[in-house]
Length: 493
Image 1 (cartoon, one colour):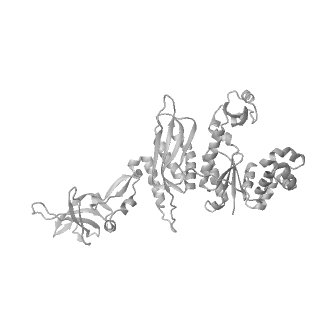
Image 2 (spheres, one colour; image 1 turned 90 degrees about the horizontal axis):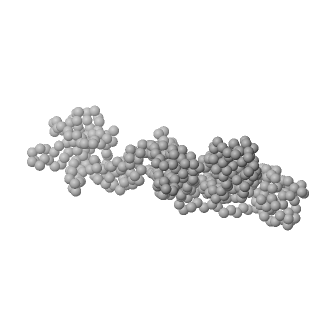
Image 3 (cartoon, one colour; image 1 turned 180 degrees about the horizontal axis):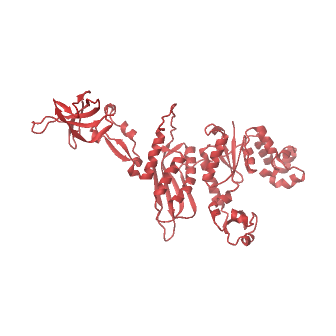
């Protein structure tokens, strides 16, 4: 099924300055001396698009006046396109601040067209923008429906009926001929289609007929797709000086939307992100504050990254006001999709558990959450080390480097910090009751470089049927009078 989503960012000039709308004095955006957009307070005062600057200031003298910034609008459109790559790799830009998405292959993945449209609107809301959204079987049809307010059409016959009712001026090539078309009574696209094609082509050129045929699905459409950059770096200038780190979360969510779109388009997963909090420049300039988020496992999910940044920002104290944010992804790798289970475990998937540990590390500090790291040493007390969760060390990788016997032999769940000396009763080690050896000995002899240790380990069972891990020293005392001693080193579950 071929389906397109068209987005018309009709409020782009207004929403690029959306933080200003909360100003109590109102805000007005000007282009060439005339009002292009205004805040709700300015509109309530009587200011309308098209007014001159002097007339707007007469109605609201305390209004905040800003000039339209096409560069900033273009950057906002690029940010939207990059964020929407998480839903489909086929995104292209169209006329009048619009974007087109080929989502036919993505419908089943995201649960249908309605669910996908909801996710697209949520992404736009996270970016601080609004758009008219439309769905249609053709790209130009989706663009026309979005340009005229938005609709959702899934079949070509329904699309033709919808398009026939649109005004003829909706097509850009028809706008120069609008007075002539109105003069002959051609007010809609349906009436425009019924005009003689040869005469219409001589009057308006072939571009009008080509666009009309593409909209109705009668001609093929060619596009230049947006290609994501090789590396990710996104920057966001804030609307004011921010002095509390918690207030930066909305800006961080704006940048994370772009990051997730870039990761999905490149089929990558991130192992760590770096958020730079840029401070004021000039004589009072200070270096940016860097927030590092290290991940134990690669991810590309915006929700998890946002939770980690929220914890980081909640613990951060700012030395100076923040004027801009910059997000980078220095460590990435190829994404590997997890394989689901037919009967999931009730305690959650391993990915859920790893995300919980990462969230605890972000809240408590990376040095407070540790993970075991196997070491290439046969001595049990030295066969493991505890390292911070975000150190980048992998327990599975380290365990794979150990020799097979060290991985296959049984080990107790609880290893004592210090071995406990055992008494001998009837030539048998005693721990609450005489212990019976139930396994062959495992000989460990290592540490010649820092003190040789020679031991014979056994699995022993007491009268209570509990299993213990004990060992006997193979080397007696130096005087040769004392017999080798027994020690308890671990308890089995």
